[in-house]
Length: 340
Image 1: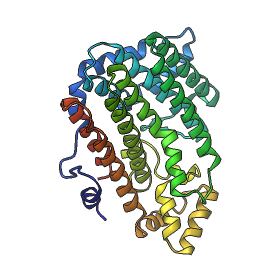
Image 2 (image 1 turned 90 degrees about the vertical axis):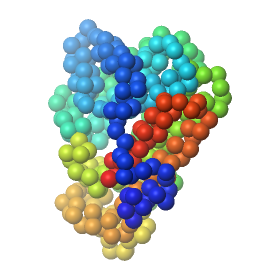
Image 3 (image 1 turned 45 degrees about the vertical axis):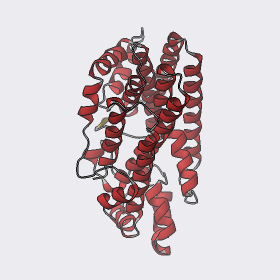
């Protein structure tokens, strides 16, 4: 099934008119610029290595989608203050901390097209600076002095950690099924997207429907985003992804393309996939790619991503009908356009 057909079947997203991130950023340009200035100011430390590693990872070219959700969500719900900028910085620090820890756990050497911090400075400094970023995020939460927001973010951080451990416990486990995998990525990836949009609504609105809307949008958007990444790991390239093709396989991670392939390919090919997972090798990546393509696993992953993207868009219905709600839709299209 082509991307266009998958989207036409499971989503209202128009693949012929790919969204641009720039149009969304223009809408909150002043806020986004303020966040980009706030982040380095909050990275100050008496320890030079903390600032060096922190600035390296923060300035490594990420799109800052999670802070963007905060800015859009607050403005969509009519917020006129400036605390949403601090909240956006908190979300970015939490995300950056998880990246530092993830790269150590996964022994990754490349992220966003650059060497990872652990590849340059080693594992111990990367983990400790990740801890610094977590603690700085919680210092900023105290400044916000909103117990509801602190509760959401502390619960989310705990769930993310559980998701990381859950994924680690299932490394190389070819018995992992789709339902279990969706729970892994809900905890590990989607939870911070959910927390970003959820806390923005809590900051800006007392309307239960609006708060529920942005909470649901965040988790569905996060699931879609991760599923697109899963697809790219087998259908993309290093230049596009900023990481090595086949990294998931090398790390022993069973993602949706392989889960679907194991259930729908020939026994011999399924055995080959299991063997490759056990060896954590991309020596025969061409054969793996041929298997996931021929059995429809890549198409299946495309459709799953499109379905979550459509659920995210549908969740926006209770929000005020304004340019910020439109921007959430545009951002969702941008996410899925990476499948093209």
